[in-house]
Length: 133
Image (cartoon, rainbow, N blue to C red; front, side, top):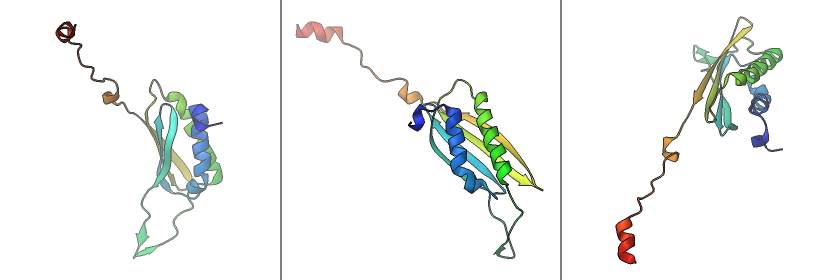
């Protein structure tokens, strides 16, 4: 079955399964999903900057656990029910882990392209038709 034939909720679930290893132990960032015609076209994770102290990159706190990643995935799937009446756009899930607890916020962005809606069609010239007959 191709991804375009799947419901958007199943596509988002698939995306989060693909990103699971990348999300594990992540402290903060944004999961970005681009949608065109209700089909996921592009997705990824934008990680927040990695901090260094005295020029050295050290081990930070633990980050997301396996259970937290699963809960994050379920929240993302459930959030699709809030998407209304648009087929093109982007969904961004900002997340962070602090002191072992995680939080996330969701941003929906719809995109429209007016250039594709109107195409130039020249007026039919009645005078030119009469002259040719």
